[in-house]
Each structure stands twice: as C-alpha cells, then as structure tokens.
Image 1: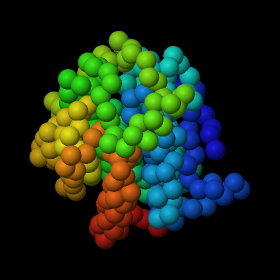
Image 2 (image 1 turned 90 degrees about the vertical axis):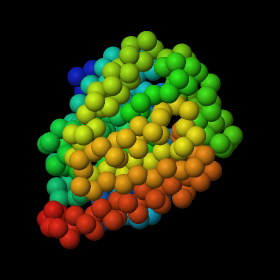
Image 3 (image 1 turned 30 degrees about the vertical axis):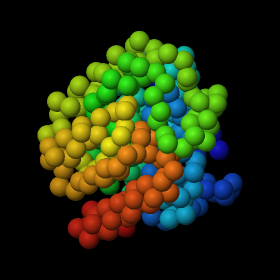
Image 4 (image 1 turned 60 degrees about the horizontal axis):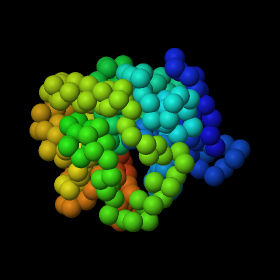
Length: 274
C-alpha cells in the first residue's frame, strides 16, 4: 500500500511494507518498527524482499521516498537540499511514534540514505525516539567512482539485480543533477567532521569492494563514534548494494539479529516501558 504525506517541498511517497493484511497493516508488529530510507536515485519499494524477511520476525516496515525520488513530488533525481530529506525523515519518525506509542523504532539508511539517517539521529530528540540505526554502505566519504564523479560502476555482483534496478522506471538513470551532487558532498563532509560526536546506537555494514562509497569511512565512524552500543561488519569482496548482492539473505539476517540484540539490551536496562 502506498500513501503520501506532506513536507515543506511537496508530497512524500510512503511505501507501507508492513504485511499483507489489508484490514490492519500494522497487524504484524509485535517486536518493533523499522523505517527504510533508500539511497540516491532509487526508491523504497525496492526493499520489499527485505521487508518480507523483517515481517517474518514481527517487525513492521515503512519505506519513505525522498523528494525527487520514486513516487514523491519533484524533478526526478533532483534534491535541492538533503537537509529537507533529513527533516522529512525526522517528521515521519515523529508521526510513527505518535501513532504507535511505546513501539520501539529503528531507522535504516542505505548509501546517501545512510548519511541522512546518521544526520537525523544527531539531533537529541530524534536519537531518543530510536533504539538504533542501521547503515548499509553509508555515504560518509564518496569514492572517485561515485555517481557524483562517474557513472556505470557495478553496484551488485548479481546480474539479475542490476537488470531489475536499471529497468525500473522509478529508478533515476540519468546524469546526476548538479545540485544533488553538491548536497551529497556537503552532507558527507559534515558527517566526517563530526564522527566523534555520534552517540546513537548503530550497526554499519559495508562491502570491502564497494567502489561507490568508502568502507574505510565506515571503519572510521566505528572507531571514532562515542556510541556505547556500536557494531560494524565488513563483507569481503561485496559491492555497494548489499541487500541486492547474492548473499542478501545472510546480510538481512545480520541486520535482524542486531536489532533483536539491541532490543534485548534496551529491555534489560529498562529503556523500554510497557
């Protein structure tokens, strides 16, 4: 089910990937909620397979399309400000928490979506609303092969997944918009300067062969962050789109296991209140 909500810049498309119960889309939730923030030029609907794995473990799932992406308003592939995407992410999380008080929430971000999630979680009121954030191949430092610099770099070792991505009409395949590229460089520079101030619990995952975003930057985040609860997993030889690699099932279970571990720790220390 797809719905929309309003932002300062137009309508934001929200994919409801919770479960296949039409009368009660939140029926599957008994553990928590995860909000998916996709990467550059793609859209939230691409994560339906991951969502099915999550719902099999009783997590509810939402995926929000950025402005200029997927089903949202705006010129396809154009992002006037990633700060607006950060604000939209925060507002959506706030709405979920209001509608479902007491249900633990996680933010998930891929690539530039990971940068968005990490910046959103840098605000204390947002950090307090989440049990943790999951970052796959986050855009913390871009490499020379990033679309900001160069096009046509493989992002998955699975040819079928590459075909599905680049034949999807909701995936933007044109040249990167100049403003969008500027915004990516701006947010990555900001985050890199502020690794030491990161306190939110996080799990960062990266492929060592990623030619789009730098896995060494993920290692730097892990090494420098002040978070008391943090984990990193580097996948040898994997490319950028981790959840579309041949080993995507394994990666998804790594994420689910981390969230369940995080919830167990939070419950033990009394953070979660019935």
